[in-house]
Length: 353
Image 1: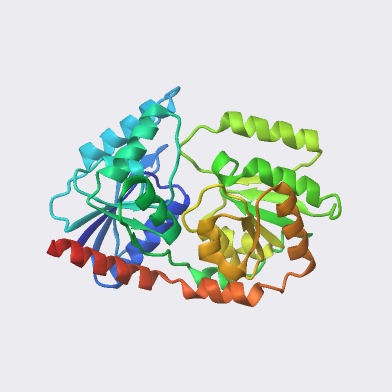
Image 2: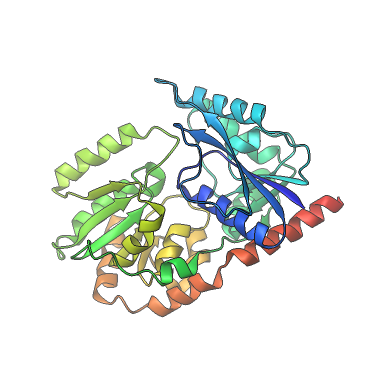
């Protein structure tokens, strides 16, 4: 079976991590897989090496100074559409709304439902739900949103987790002292302002605990939100450590060194970064969302607001072993081989139609 997996970016975002891991697992099952992506900012490859069994096609996408989000979305679609040749593939599977808009006949994974205000992006999101002939979701909660909002029935295929990579990681010795880690950068969907408020409340009783934020590669312009976040940090008298993107090989050791992993996202499809933290044996505190209740069950601590997040982080610091084994077991139960086999079964059913 010849499969094309399409991504909008080569950067280390959750959907891109998913795309590469799925591609490699599909290839391990005997499929002929090619991953297509836009190469933003001069990128000629992905953020990490890709198994040679997977073919990679990077479409150059040069930056245009001063280009707004809307025009950039439209140009992204057109550039990928012009470069991609669907002929010869049995299945074309898009992992985001941009790549789903670039191809006429496509399977789409909807990782989570967004609500955009930029007109071009809102239209891209809507078309990428309505036009695909088949849909996949990584959780039943998101599949339920699709069914209720659009009448779309999606196959539910959970993510895998690179369990061993995190479970065997040794904590980075450069990180001494206690800290709470968040991965995903500073942006509205990641609940960064709530995390800042929670950190300030936590420090009232745990003044030595730092907040460390990693990641943040994104297509969108969150400068205004970042400015508001920095202003609020100054008002609260806290100084989080903002690392920006962390190298692929360095991430497991950073995660393993954390005392708590904070995951206060307002929208998620699965929560892969938090599941990797569980694999590393790090307690997870997450926002109380239906999708995260579904995925993490009794292996994480849940809260709905900054005060609750602070309280749950305080509990995790006081008793880090309480959920460690359930967390490790849960993370080990998700694997990319199973995800790939479920995708292949779906593809075979679609090809019979």
